[in-house]
Length: 238
Image (cartoon, rainbow, N blue to C red; front, side, top):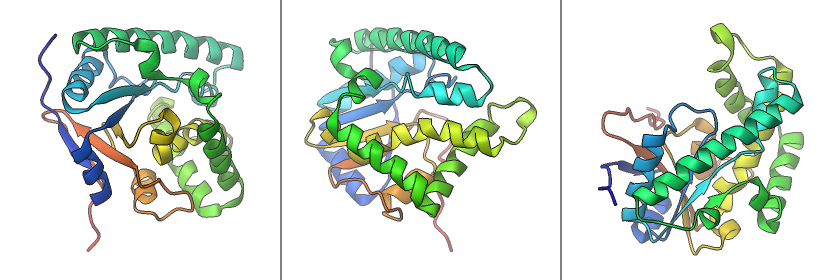
């Protein structure tokens, strides 16, 4: 087993800090097609998490990323094939990362669409997020802005995504929101911290209870920083 890497964990709120002190469960977000999640980085994140938390699991949004691929111009059949292939690649990286951390049980640790689609808590929260997207203007606008920023980084020459592209790709983000609201309930943990290498305005608003959908008390969020990475937490307003 290799030595854990030094990472800085930044709880988003005081409640997140309290949950981090308990260190019961961490949910590592793995974004398909994001170059950040190279094999070495996933292994580093896993070794750190294994040293810090009682239990480690991974969020692998394999099927929902089809929406993003379609928004970027791929036909649905090709998007599904590419998403499936990338999901397998990421699963293999997670398997190797678990081995480097001395952990086993790949299938029980990877939470993918197969698991989520049959989970009643996820299904209900996902339905709520979709309903708010359809009826609540601020919630909808924040989801679309989040999606717009993702697409801007992936479209050629930094071109501006169309309204249709944003609407389509937003379905990927709407499938993420339940895990930010109650991962603990979805996976059956006493508490949970969703851990990712970035924070975004939507998540900041969600955990500061500025949106109609809010995390349960046992749900927290951690931003993880490797040495030399910048802190992109929202700065307090004067």
